[in-house]
Image 1 (cartoon, rainbow, N blue to C red):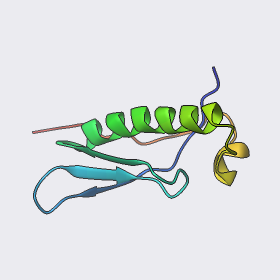
Image 2 (image 1 turned 135 degrees about the vertical axis):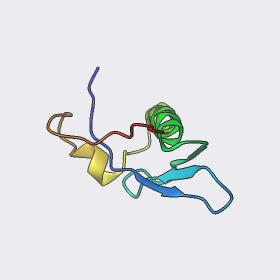
Image 3 (image 1 turned 120 degrees about the horizontal axis):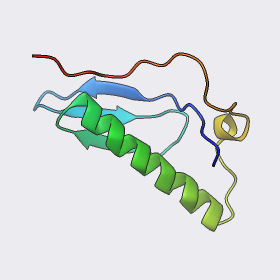
Length: 81
């Protein structure tokens, strides 16, 4: 199984919680109570969107067609109190 790094934009919502979206994968929208939960849901949504592209024979978005395998440094959210 190939893994890629997908850019995700995460922002706090005024009513609470967080929203995750991606310009690289149109249609990816995920909401969670915490940033970590929103990112976890975003991963699942991304997998399902990519599966849908493939099942329907649609071409993947350009960034995903040329994406290099995952490597390097990434930042992850850690909850602290």
